[in-house]
Image (cartoon, rainbow, N blue to C red):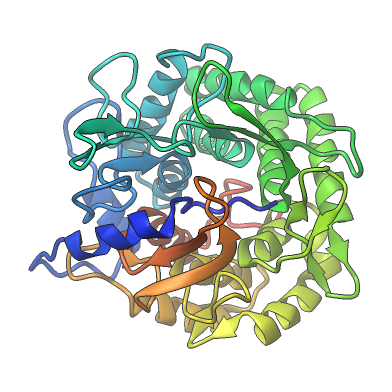
Length: 404
């Protein structure tokens, strides 16, 4: 099962939208410039808020690990390694100073802002109705894909700075991910854990997106360490992704159900694009078919939707498609997609997650599977980071402007 990044009950998110804060400043058209402006010149480790205009509820001051990791990589691609290190150092601090875990895992989200207290603060919010502090079960969990993105960020910094701390941190996370290895069906790695210590729920499904992330992260770790065992582990994840290819659909299934074998055939954009730009040979084998499939089934407005559940514009995924088209050598197609993304700059800065008031994903909420999960029209850190990656034609899975 693919696990996208917004995982809260719809009624909670709907309650947040009226609190989006309007600002008079006009955002720059250059995503790299905007991302760099978020990092103060002076200071130490920090996490950036994923949805900076939200003032109450589960998303207020939440720094999702994936969002911050992709932002760190984007800053490396933008040539601003110093700013990227601030986020990388926050990831290392979280790795060293968790309130419960000391085994190489991270959380799916942290409290945004400077890291000044230990253990590193997790996300949460004050519920006025219950008159108490609450945490979200997804935010405190540890998805395999998010752990792999943290590795990708640290390895991008290792490549850019040769600071051994980043390689060491990535290796620690990788060792934890090895424990998620699975032999059912096509193998690969399971989803991770959800909910609270000391006994979080085990996620037994497997995700195409997650295994793509893991394969890329382990490949870079093999390059960084010279240890071929990581290349073997990368191949274990890559074989799973290859097995998710469906000739009848001309697409990748998003993963498996909880049995680890039965394909989950929801069509989701990132599960189609990421294997092409992350795994060797995938673009040559499938890019033409995937581009045709997503063009026929996920194209809407001027860009792409998240899934077939709703054809509204998903800016993050459209920027991902723009980057892919650049890497395939299709710069005209990429430019058209970048133009669509550029129309979604918020007055307060950053790129809106979607063009409409809300965008259905086709998935249930991790907090309440019976509740539909949506993206909302809020400025979103990851959408802006992917826009920067597309601007620079920088592949976060290879730390370069090339396919694997």
